[in-house]
Structure formats: structure tokens, C-alpha cells
Image (tube, rainbow, N blue to C red; front, side, top):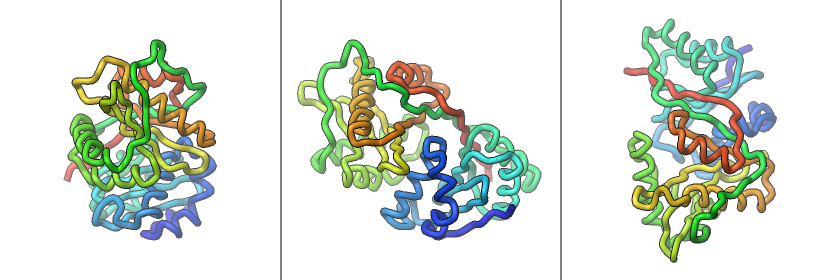
Length: 274
């Protein structure tokens, strides 16, 4: 079974769309990334053209300069994908654990480059929403254009805390503002926390960019913002709400489980040093 590789998002969705939509929870990132490229064009994530690939039992998306995002697939399919991508300037992959391990092992065999695991994430899906008790003071509101500078500052700080170089923060914020995809939690009229949400895809949305500045932490604001943005998604009629948490952060993992999110799968990000 051969891998089909293209730079056309429409061709990719024609070939892989049914596969992705059959498991929208597990394929949340591939669905939302391709939707963003379709909405905002091939330069949505950077100057390099995106690359897409699929076969009957797997799919991947790459938006340079980032690495490739791999769906669930048999280990043999991951190894064959490594063969298909050999010779490209691939900096890394992010995938379910077994998929990432199979790809990295074949990549090492082909190139001699030993992959380095630089992050582990756990995917959660909402079961039954359980608001925090006691509730944090304040209320949530959908962010507006007047909040743009604040959101850019917070997104920049959020990425730095994750150990990432801030990239395309203004573009991310502008995109979220265009469809009401950012929520601010305010206490006494002051913004103290934020949470974002993706556009709906196959009945699924993903909560993202949950961030509270250090001076406002340990007061329940992150849980309140996450609850508010989750409830807004449910009120809009989505069937699945998902989110990722850093596997090494016990605070966020415990918080999301208290709110009613249940673990689905673990994923890892592997870098290939040049």
C-alpha cells in the first residue's frame, strides 16, 4: 500500500477525509490544521508550502518549518512513511507513541540520525462536564478585537513557557478572533486567564492555549476559563470536545480530569537533530 504525497489540501482531503473524520477525536490536530490551511491558505503556518500524505490506514500533515503530524497507523505503515520522506529536511514528528517509535527507528536505520523525544502529550476527551467547586470569582466573555494586544502578549508568554520560540502569534490570535475562538476570564473586570478553541471539524473542537499569567495563578481561573469555553462549545452543538495536556505536568492533568475529561491516548514529539 503506497503513500500518496501532495501539496494540495483539497487533494489530501479528497483522499484522506473519510479516514480522518471516522475518528475525529484521535485525528483532532490533522483535522484542525488542514481546516486552517483551507481557510487561510498554504502560508497559514509559515513560508514553506505544506505537505500532506495518506494511504488507507494512515495520514500525515507537515507545515514547514515544523515537523510532521502523524495519525494512528500500523507500525509498518509508519516505517514505510519514513522511507517515503527520506531525503527531506524533516526536523521531527509528533504521533501516538507506537507510531512515533516505529517511524524514528526506521528513520535512524535510513539516515543514522537518532531521534530525541522532546515532549509527551496526553489527549483527553470530555465525558461529562463537571464545573469547579468552589467556582472561581468572575465570569468569562468572548475576546474581541480590543483584546488583541493582550492576547498576543499572553500567547507569546505561553509559547515561551512551553519551551517554544514564539511563532505566528499574531496570526494565531487574529484567526481565533475571526470566529470568536478565544475566551477571557475576568475577575472584577480584569482579564486573568484565557482559553482558546478550534473551529468545529467533524463535530469535534479542541480546547487550546489555556493560559494564566503567573501573578493570577492558584485561584482557579484556568479551570473556570476551560469550563466556560467547553460549555460554549457544547452549547454550539459539537459532539466531542478534546484537549491535550503535557504528560509531565501533574497539575494540568489533574485539573482536566476533575472537569470531566478522560484520557484517550499518549503522544510524543521526536526531533531529528541535523
